[in-house]
Amino acid sequence: MRGETFFTRKITRAVAAIVQGRQECLYLGNLDAKRDWRHTRDYVEGMWRIMQQQEPNDYVLATGITTSVRDFTTQAFAVGGIEIRWQGTREAEVGKDAQTGAVCVQIDPQYYRPTEVDLLLGYATKAREKLGWQPVCDLQQLVQEMVEEDLRTP
Image (cartoon, rainbow, N blue to C red):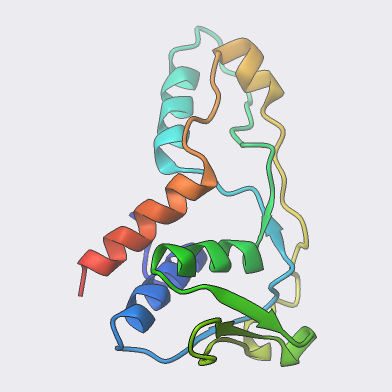
């Protein structure tokens, strides 16, 4: 459901295009940035539960687990059948196909955000306690669904 330029979608679309031979390389910025990614189904369930409350209140919907951009990217390529090995540091870091040695991921400084937040992590204790909400889709399932969908879509 994410737009093609949304960050996670950019990664999964590029993985699909590389696997299908339509693209050679994915260009990213800060591989060390960590995010608390979650599935839309979990968000929608949480929003529905919030709307069922008699009194308005603020809730955080989050997994409480962070994953780096590097790890998300590695998982996405794995779903596409490519094992990524990371080499180098900072702007010189690349992700190579472990089997062929082809460079599949490169750093492009234009994708560094000047106001980048290194860590985004949510605490959903209140949502769990008051709403009985908790995420059911883990990151592996999210990545798998996204990559598989992008592999089906030309």
